[in-house]
Length: 93
Image (cartoon, rainbow, N blue to C red; front, side, top):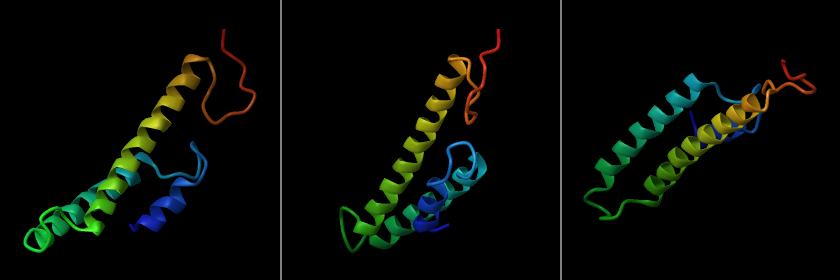
């Protein structure tokens, strides 16, 4: 999955159109594989890694932070008695 596709998928609704947990995991694994390949390729060329390698690092970190943000939003909504993704949900007594 390309970075563009990841961005396009993540622009969807938090609960609806976004990437599922499995898709996020697969995307992260793909990026990790690409990171390892780039490290192997760039080891002899550039001592600190290429710009492409840094971009992959940033994408991995971005996915991790987005997942954390989504989890916190869901937890906060649950603690407030709301069901995430629903408008006007009445608090259960």
